[in-house]
Amino acid sequence: DTEVTQTPKHLVMGMTNKKSLKCEQHMGHRAMYWYKQKAKKPPELMFVYSYEKLSINESVPSRFSPECPNSSLLNLHLHALQPEDSALYLCASSHGMGTGGRTEAFFGQGTRLTVV
Amino acid sequence: KQEVTQIPAALSVPEGENLVLNCSFTDSAIYNLQWFRQDPGKGLTSLLLIQSSQREQTSGRLNASLDKSSGRSTLYIAASQPGDSATYLCAVKVIKAAGNKLTFGGGTRVLVKP
Image (cartoon, rainbow over all chains, first blue to last red; front, side):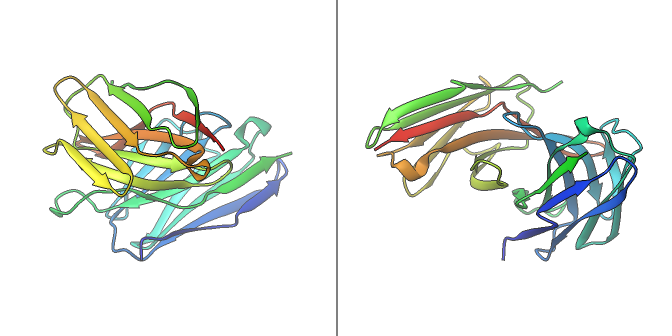
């Protein structure tokens, strides 16, 4: 099983709403990532979790709040977003460093977020 | 700072022709390089992973080469089919003290005409 599952697939939210994106993998990966992708652009890294600890935050605004409750789950909590935050949000996972294994990254199908 | 560039940005070929997609990166201290395919509005599908110690990887009609010293990788797709139409992205993994970091190129949009 090389699947990363993201829910929901589509989300429309108002600027005052609070919502969450969810990501799940059962490959035993200990590194998990959030990426943001605008139309016709490459994915841009937002956050990296390594062994359930936040290891990289690419200066993302605090209206995006990541959470890693356990080694299989990754959430992205959204609050007071702006229309320019509308994008495809991608979750990925890979083996963590020091495992000696291949660190191939696997991506989910993404959540298409529209902020109105 | 690692920068990844893909040329050309778009490519249109008739069915049956071979595809050659290029990827270059500025910092040769990479851990691995990965090629992905992305269909419109969808997630990324991993095609090939090349470890930094490898020179090439093959899977079916796909072959990817890596020249770390010159900072280049090439993805070859033999005998292209209309179903190969998609955006192809290369990404390099760099190891930082804080954790892994995957940096993407801008992608090459491929159209294979029947």
